[in-house]
Amino acid sequence: MSQTTGSRIGRGTRTGLLLGVLALGACAPQATGYYRPPTADPVPKRLQAAYVPFTHVAYFATDRAELDQAERQRLERFIDTLPSPEGVSVRIRGHADERLGRVYNADLAARRARHVAALFAGRGYSDIEIGTLALGEAVPVSAGSREEGWRRSRRVEIVVQVPMITLPACPDWSAPEGVAAGNEPMSQLGCATALNLAATIANPADLVAGRPAAPADGVREAAAVERYRTDKVKKLPGSRPRERTGQ
Image 1 (tube, helix red, strand yellow):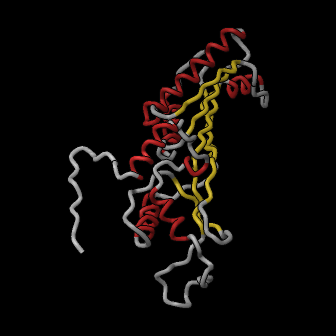
Image 2 (tube, helix red, strand yellow; image 1 turned 180 degrees about the vertical axis):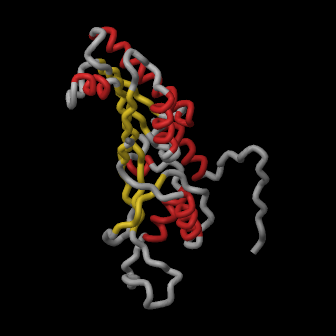
Image 3 (cartoon, helix red, strand yellow; image 1 turned 90 degrees about the horizontal axis):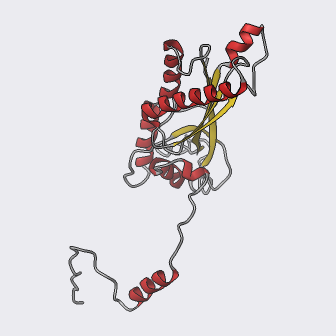
């Protein structure tokens, strides 16, 4: 069975969330990524973001580097329950039982990991980071009988790190006065801003860890500031000069 940590809001609930958010501010593009239920947090209201692991274990037949039909279907169902790939990272660890020799088992584990990685790539995860590691027979599963231990050791372990956003606990602003509990003056600072950010963020991983700033060219930027200061800003191609009106 798949072991999944965390929860996600379905398409219908997420659509309702976005419609409510759009009523608060300007039109926003449809959000990507998944959201967790709101939790109470201090003023001002802020989004909380963290990586949540989704895990799965796929088992292989003896001396086989490809999954049989049943195990492949289990894996595909797991992949299909995952969020959209934005910001997601996948770690795949291949294993083998203790038979057939250490060198052979290391190669077999590597081929198993690559097989699973290819299945991820074929189901929409070709443009994200997929890391593979071959551990061979180094980490056996010893529980159970000898045959059962070997069966459980012939495996690939998958950990998918999903950036998930926890929304702040904001009241229903459309409710009549006095109905929305806790909707007191100055108690909901930042709620609308936080919800609009959740609706417009393209990659939820950016809220977990921002992207590093690109190298800056000081001479070029200083020249741009000087052009602006002296009213010598370069016109965009195809732009029309702005008309001046008299007072």
